[in-house]
Length: 225
View 1 (cartoon, rainbow, N blue to C red):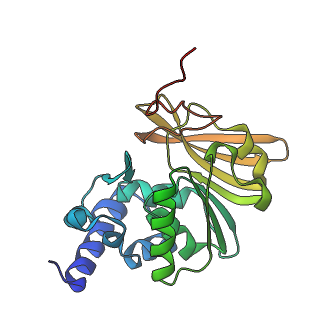
View 2 (cartoon, rainbow, N blue to C red):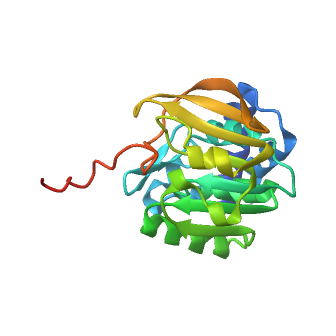
View 3 (tube, one colour):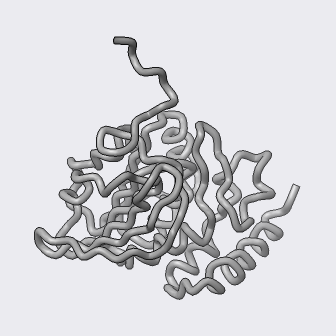
């Protein structure tokens, strides 16, 4: 079993070789990536993969994103310390922990109850207290806590869900992988009144965003007609 100091050394190397080397420059994002213990967000049997340049399965058909993608998406949000952030797809809780390090309050929605519960427990154990977790359909957002200064979607959507556009504050930033169920373009939207400025960042691959305004859940049989 690796010691915490060994994990720390791997984490610092991850930031330099995988993230800084690819052009992420925001010093606050880099410091958060150096600080948050990514290995704790993986099943114990897979912790040796924590700082590799890849996504890793965490169960329930979900993954913890590649470190570079976490850093890039976070940088695209241009977070301030007072921002209210909505995350769609809590997963392991790792991306949420990074957001919580940089923003004022994070609201995170996960459709799989077991993942939401595990993530909330771990975040609390790590003393990350500025996070609110709920189980629900992420394509509908979290309207009760809107508007948000930033919204991040950690699953591939067929399009930007309308509810998320509506819940974004004026001047707010939204980052979402959008495309097919197997490959997407990473989009960054900025709201300007009723208009949205859109920039494409890079190609990427995420698990599908499932919900009323996303992809259909094909893991459960459709009712017979």
